[in-house]
Length: 353
Ligand code: AMP
Image 1 (cartoon, protein in one colour):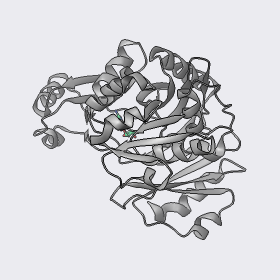
Image 2 (cartoon, rainbow, N blue to C red):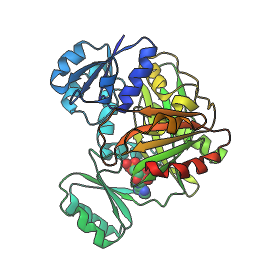
Image 3 (cartoon, protein in one colour):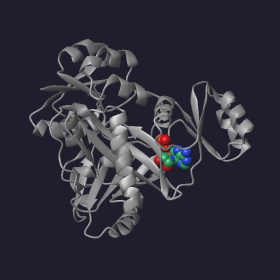
Image 4 (cartoon, rainbow, N blue to C red):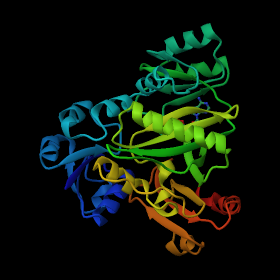
């Protein structure tokens, strides 16, 4: 079985490493050969060779949303999750509209065609504080503007693209889960608590310290959402906990950074589950092995292995990417005997941020 992956970043890289153990083979389509997946046994194709990539793959999936739509359309009969799911996720506006239309809880939002229109809407509705996000190409805090006063609106004046204007949520915490679904099965992963800085995930801890009631609600939303999307694959869902209830912030129908902890902390990893889901074979169990801390290594040189692995139950992952400001270069998972240990460990890791 040859699986084609659109995108060859770290999510594809880790999927391929796991899948290779399972006897699967991979093709990857990306802009260039200089990607994490080039360190695996996958055959790499660049965008211009997408027809050959299609012909040589039995099924096709994606690990990244920013792939030219013409290519995704061309491969759509082999695509899992479906073209519709990809299309939904390619623009924030489509994603938010879908969630709202299907009665999933989201923060109040407006849509605008450009910066000036956004400014008018905000003034008319006195919608401050708010967060303005570009509908396309935003991730890890890119394309986001926090508007705390009318003064801040200057920042978006010149934006000439579709925007979404979201209510600023003064959340109690951020949490997430991953749901896997195929024609045979649905399984939800344990819930993580996520800590972001400037829109980028710094670390997460699983399980999240939330009530049983909220946990059930999150699981229920995850299952219902996977059904509403007719998902064959996995879906990461990020939530704000607000007024002791939840609002969906964002969804991603593929492996996700918030699920990296599953590589060591869970019976089945998100990467294996992703493959099982798109192959329509039985899903793995999702029990937690031990409380797990995942720390992103952002914008750093590769640390010395012995520095990391001297920590008890630490597991190190490196993505072979060129170092750039705010870029995720790798991560560490640490399995804990006692969940409270994470606070102390995080303090020691300040040097990596
Ligand atoms: P996003 O790329 O939309 O997931 O946003 C990245 C991070 O920015 C979130 O995880 C939050 O920490 C923060 N953020 C995004 N939208 C909002 C919002 N409407 N209110 C408050 N914080 C937000």
